[in-house]
Image (cartoon, rainbow, N blue to C red; front, side):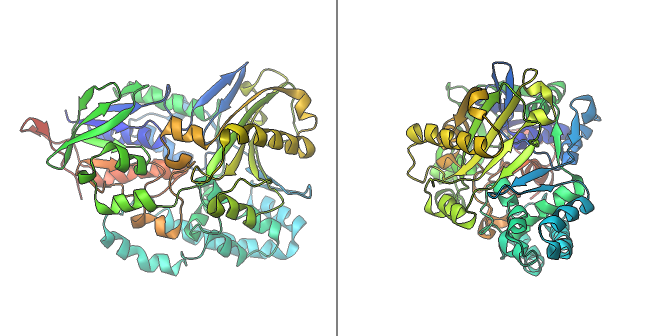
Amino acid sequence: MSHAAIIGGGFGGIAAALRLRAKGYDVTLFDRCSRLGGRAQVFERDGFRYDAGPTVITAPFLFEELFDLFGKNIRDYVDIVPLNIWYRFRYPDGDSFDYGGTVNDTLREIRRISPEDEASYLSLLKESRRIYEVGYEQLADQPFHSFTEMAKITPQMLNLGVRRSVWDLVSSHLKHDKLRQAFSVQPLLVGGNPFDTTCIYNLIHFLERAHGVHFAMGGTGALVDAFSRLLLEQGIQIRLGETVTRLHSENANITSVELASGECVDCDLVVSNVDPAHLYQNMLPSTEVDRSAKVKAKFAKKSMGLFVLFFGTDTTYPEVEHHTIWLGPRYKALLNDIFNRKVLADDFSLYLHRPTATDPSFAPKGCDSFYALVPVPNLQGDVDWETQGSILRDRVVTALQETMLPNLKDHLVHDFWMTPEDFAHDYLSPAGAGFSIAPSFTQSAWFRFHNKAEGPDNLYLVGAGTHPGAGLPGVVSSAKVLDKLVGPPAEKSRGFHHLQAAE
């Protein structure tokens, strides 16, 4: 049986492993972490649990499809529940905007803030649906390693006005600044600046509206555990705590992967869920990498970095929703500091996750579990995180105490944090970027790292840096692209295996 090696156990790697197993490959999945999930790690402290990675599920059907491949029902493995309020936006003046539920629920909230924008929201929703129907339904699982494929869809893209930013699109419909901010933050969920990200990512707005926002009981870690069980049931070998350092090739085909221990594992096909820039700059000889990949690896604009503060409290804050987007006093100027100037400003915005609002098992009885995620410059900025980490921690705690979490400092049980330096070390993320490369127009579809490697013939890429992009729907969809690139297992010959791929 032909052997496929999957490098990286994030959701893209997990999905790729399952899809190739369903095709009949013998599959081994390698990951450097102590558990699967990639950035979706789980921390346990003093009876509190913290999801370290993604916490929002917007397309549960993508996960259901992977279980369906083997005649399994995801509900027998994990309980995924819908949320009524998807996000609560909290503004500097103390006002808030609850987004979620039905369209009428959203219109009621809009009417309270800006009655004149009620009809405008419906026009935005209509345009978002049009973008979704093309950008997601038609293109998310299509390969774009050939410029011919890009040329075919260029007229559609131009018709959608994809050179506009998400901010430009939203502002062409909505007039009130609070609503403009609320409906333009989605690119930040996939590592992009709303003022630079192509408006095709406004499809996230309709994706949420079409399928809702969900949460896996037990957290994203419980979803990873469900997939781990499925992987093992299907005979997929999982090797944790194993870092693949190098790929060896012969005649433009990868023949083995080398581990940090020096062990080499033979394979016929490799799927990389590693950041593409790290893959091309560190894991392959330069002579095996196409010029296009070298240029992107060196010059592609990275996403922002992330500072993530985890903390538990010995009291509960029932007024705080599951997901809160806490907006600071500046919007465009702050994003410019983060993405372009790459300086750590005195002010900030953040996303506050309170899973105990939905699942009390995340904390001891009478307690709450939180994490606050702050967009910050990646490591291309000159930030000394050894000193700035504790300073930013204090500022975040003070800001939350003064606005949403009264007497927080008196109720903290513990806290700890991650910085872009941790992302670089733990996940081999170049520049400590939180979401690989940014989702600008010139870094999307064919311009993004290709799913069919720009290098060896039997190397494929999935994950945040590839098409269609970051976020759970994006990385899981990147593995769907493999169905159009990888054929059934080939017969073995001449001492090693050759892949029959549908180009």
